[in-house]
Image (cartoon, rainbow, N blue to C red; front, side, top):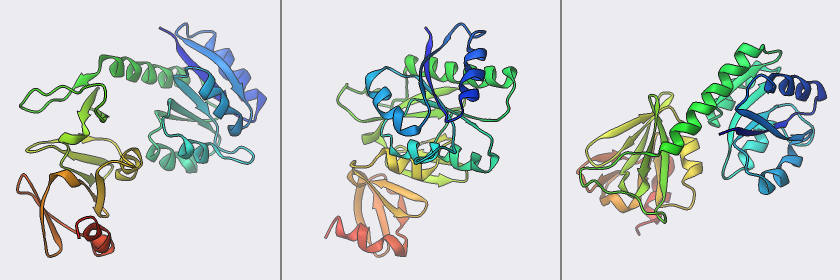
Length: 240
């Protein structure tokens, strides 16, 4: 299966270089070219796209601003001459960050990483609780990277999410999954769900709350979590 990709870059030379590299990667297919980020919206609606080669500094809308507008993102490889945006890029969960000018070897490594991630997603490796529960097509799920696997988790089985350095601990009833994500990126993915932030480092599933006691939330599994002062009124407004 080919990886269907589009290039979003205001420099024609960048398109030429990537197209030249594509010739030597039989499983990569460039199916579109955009010279402004705003041109990509319609293309993403019209075509099934697996991968974006995305520049950062572009007119009207930067590459990172463009990513923040997308509800469902393809895999993304940043191609930029600016190294200072790398951290922000990875916080937006991009697959790789190529610093221009990049050589074919480095480009190939980035594409191979995406190919591996696509294969893992298709396998839909399921993380289940002791009940062996499997998700139905209508149930909300998260896909979390764990070591070399991508794990599928039912959001209703998540008690809370805890920031842990450059990782997030996804706590189920009596165990957790450690995934290289930011809490903010997971909060954005869970907008409109039953998850609320109770602390700068904690998101909880409202359905797992047993009771509130002072400045703490006690969950149905007995876990007691602190409520940050900044979030106290917001948390209590959900229950009072």
